[in-house]
Image (tube, rainbow, N blue to C red; front, side, top):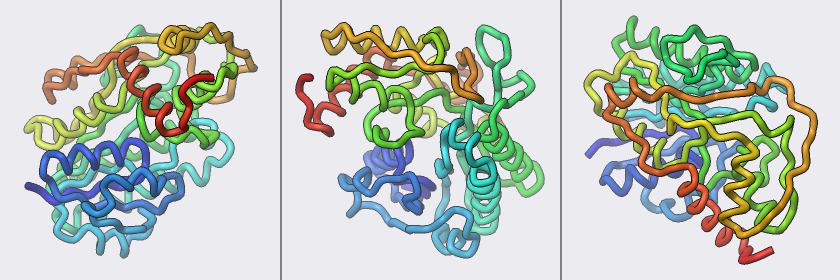
Length: 316
């Protein structure tokens, strides 16, 4: 079994990935400065991982943490489009410069392969029914631009230095361990606790905006496949469900799951948000053998149950 590093390993995606890698018998090293990661996410696995409380922008400390590491899953980031609009320099520093630092440390440590958590934000608001990897990127937010720069650095390190890199573009991932208390968290993590308490969710715009919501287990599976797929190095691949669900449909599904009839509250649209996002996942299917196994509705049911237990809410 391999020694694997996860940057951002105390975050929502990173901690779920760590749990799965441990189940598969791998050794796991976690790097996190807990700027957005949560210590409680590591509680179930804390005694089974090697934890380094390190900022990914610190090259020397990253080199020390990466000793004997064979694979790196680079999940560490400052996510959120609104945050990047408010603080573009900070978003660039962590998401672009931080990625460059991780790549350099990985190259010098002799890492076999690095899997990068890229973002569908790189596509921007292109008018196609499904976003495919051959489209020219047109990010419309500082976050999307910084994450795209991370992709470019990954490809450069693969071509110039021979470091195997794979970029997985995530589309609106949701599930257990997503922080409901952060103002920058995903829509599911905001809506579910509110509706569990009988409160109205707030929608920016008219609710017609669509997203390719992807349950966490699907994304974890894509990462596991990307670790060893022989044709994956150098590639950029969509990692999602390949479906399109509106924000209003999310509210309808949650009402059905909860047995409620809560109406949303509508607010003005936010700057930097795109209207529609849906992925073509055929390339990931061909190169990785990836096929999402958990539907949006089933993922919502599992996530609702997790929040019930996490927040101690049985009914509103």
